[in-house]
Length: 65
Image 1: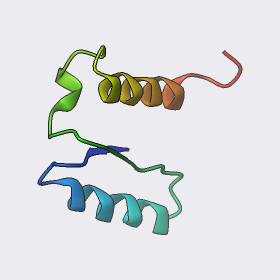
Image 2 (image 1 turned 90 degrees about the vertical axis):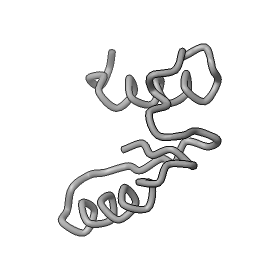
Image 3 (image 1 turned 180 degrees about the vertical axis):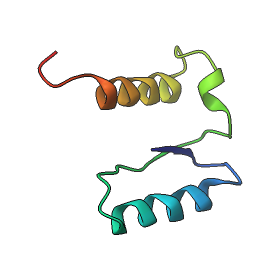
């Protein structure tokens, strides 16, 4: 789960990630520094956006590929 550092919804995301973890869901929460809500609409050439996209790919890629 990704949240942006400067997103008004960041705290809600942190709470939700904690609730998922308490419920036994395997969850990883990453706060993406220096970003605003909707940052994934920006070009991945921006370092933080590119790193976030890489994290998403890592999370959904089947093991061993």
